[in-house]
Image (cartoon, rainbow, N blue to C red; front, side, top):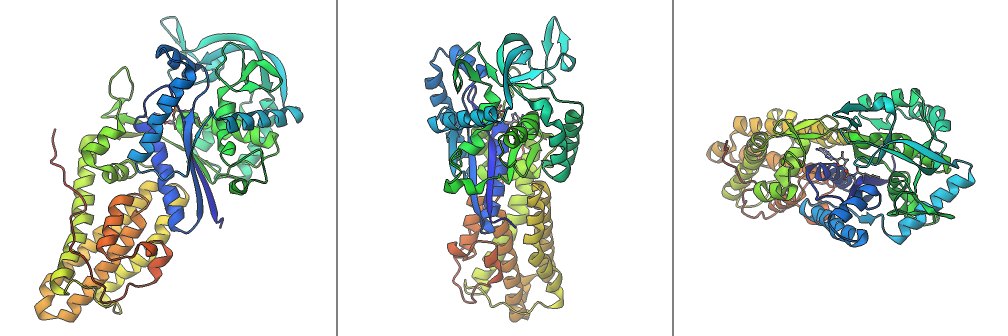
Length: 509
Ligand code: MSP
C-alpha cells in the first residue's frame, strides 16, 4: 500500500462565483484526504483556480476589468469557499503564478524535444464556454446556431496553431487503460472513454493566436498555450515540477484526480497522453462524478436556480450539508438536490439515529455511572453481533473509500448506527440500574465503544461535529486515528455532560 496520497480537485474557472458543483468536487476530495490522514498516510490535497483562456478574458472584459485584477478578485471567492466548506487542502494553486508558467513552458519544451509538437493551422469549431474543440459530427443546430453536446454554442475558428500529435497516442492509451482497469472510474465512464479513443483521435490544437490571456509558447510569442494544456499542468506544478529532485515530487503520481463527468475527456485522454509523451508517469486514477440538478431542473444562471453553498451552510449547518451531498446520491451518478431530502436526512439519520444515540448513552453514563467511563468487559452473547460489526466497520468503510464509493461508506456506517439503536432498545440500560447494575455498566460501555467507532470514521465526512462528539466521549485529540481504535479507553475516565450534536429542522414546503 502506498504511504502517500496526492489528491486533486479540478482548478476552477474564475469567470463566475462558486456554486454547488464546485463545492461537490472539492468535498469528495476533502473526505478522501481526511480519511487517508486518519489512516496515517502522508497526504497532499490540492485545489485552485484556472485563470487563463478566452472565457476568463471575456468575463474580465464584461466586468470592465484588467484580467489579472479580475482573476485576483474572483480567485479569492474560491479560496473563501474552502474555508466555508471546511476543506483541508494543503495548497491552493493559481495558474497565473510564475512557477506555473515556468512548468507549462518546461512541459511544452519537453514535448517539442520529443517530436510531439508541430506547427500548422487550426480550422474548426470551438466552444469558449467549454474551452474545447468539437468535430462537425458532434454538433447540433438550433435557430441557425450550432451547439456542442454540452449545450455550449460553438464558433468557427481559423488561425495558426501548434498541434500535439495526439493521433499517435490512441493505441498506447488503449494499452494503458487495459493495463490499469481502474484508471477511470466509474466503470461506465471508462467504457465511454475507451469507445471514444477507439473511434480514433485527431491531433490536438494546443496554441491560440487570436487572444493574449495565456502562457506564452516558448520561442514563439505570437502564440499562447491552449488553456487545457496550461490548466492540466497545475497538477505537477504544485509538486515542484520541473524540478524532479523537489521533495514534493515524490508524491507523484496522483492517487485520484477528482473531476466532473463534463471534463473527463481532458483528464483521461489528453492528460495521460501529455504526460507519457513527456516521459512522465500517468496518474493512478481519474474519478468522474455526476451532475446535480435542483429540484428536478438543470442548474443554470439563466433559470436563476444556482445553489449557493454558502447559503446552504448558513441555513443547515456545515456538516449536515457535507453529509447530505455524499449520502444522497451514489458518487458517480447524477443526482437531484431537494430541500425535503436534505431535511429528511438531517432529521432522521443525523439528529435522530446518531445524535439521540449519543445523547441517550452519554446522559445515562452521567446519571448511572457517576459521569465516568465504565470498564470494558468481554462481550456477552447479546453484545457479540454489534461488537463484531464495529470491529469490521473501519475496514468496510475503507474499502468503499478506496473506490470513492462515498455513499456506500455512509450507508455501511448508518446501518451500524441503526443496529446500535436496536441494541440500546433491546438491552434497555436505563432499566438495569436497579435490576442488574453490572450489566447496565457493560451495556453502556459497549455503546460508548460503538460511538467512538462511529465518530472516528465519520470525522472524514463531518469533521467539526465529530470532533465535538469525540470530546464528549473523552477521546484525547492525539488518539483519533483509525489505529487508535485498537487501544481501549481507560475505565474511570471522567466524561463531560453531553450536548446535542445536530439541530433538527422543521420540515417546510
Ligand atoms: N477549469 C476547468 C477544470 C480544469 S482542471 C485542470 C473547469 N472548471 S469549472 O469551474 O467549470 O468547473 C469545475 C467542476 O465543477 C467540474 O468538476 C464540474 O463537473 C463541476 N460542476 C459544475 N456544475 C456542476 C453541477 N451542476 N453538478 C456537479 N458538478 C458540477 O471545468
